[in-house]
Structure formats: C-alpha cells, structure tokens
Amino acid sequence: MQGVDSKSGELAVRREYARLAPVYDERWSFYIRATLEETAKRLALRANDKVLDVGCGTGALFQAIAPRRPSAEFVGADLSAEMLALARRKTGGRAAFLGAGANRLPFRARSFDTVVSCNAFHY
Image 1: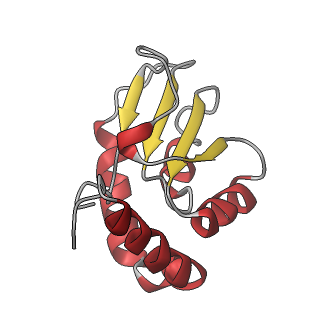
Image 2: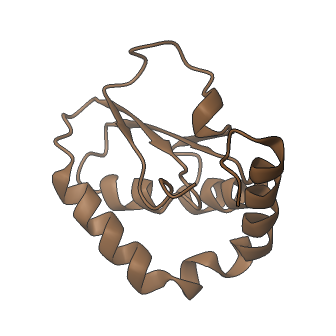
C-alpha cells in the first residue's frame, strides 16, 4: 500500500477501517488490550494534561487512561468516520474526536501536553 501521504493510500485506509469498525474491538481484543495497557503504563500524565491520540480508532486508549487520570482532557483523531462514531458512543462525550490524519492535524504547535499513537504507526 502507498503511504498515507497519497490520496489513494488514505482512501484505502478509510475503506478498510469503515469495513472493520463494527468488529474491530472484538476481533483484536487481546492485541488491543495488551498494547493499550503497555502504552498507558508508560504515559506520565499529570492530572490536567491535554492528550492527543493520533489514530485513536474506537477510543480504547481513552478508556484505558480515563480511570487513571479522570481530569485529563482527551482528544482523538482518526481517518475513519465509522471508528470515530464508535469512539464517541463508547466514551459518552467524555472525550473529543475528530476526523483527521496524522499528516494534517488541525492544531497549533504545543496544543497538547502529550501526543500518543498506539497501533497506528504502520499507516
């Protein structure tokens, strides 16, 4: 597959995750749980940090972090509208999610205390 900088590569990623969204969390639950737990352990978040999750998928990282840092502000960005819809439902409005790729994030420099990407670097 071409890199996400290309339109065709980005479109392929969007299509694939639109198709996978309904079964994503269940299908890869062991892998997701293991990688998110390890990521959450390594994050040195302070109480009110603002966190950006690039390639947030269904919002699983927020769910792993929220119990440990309930006052942290969480924003997730992902290419897949279907994955973002699941993230919004799962988090009940406790996090913000927007459609954006890693190569075109709509934020100013230093907008976040922590930027993380878990399970998305291969794109």
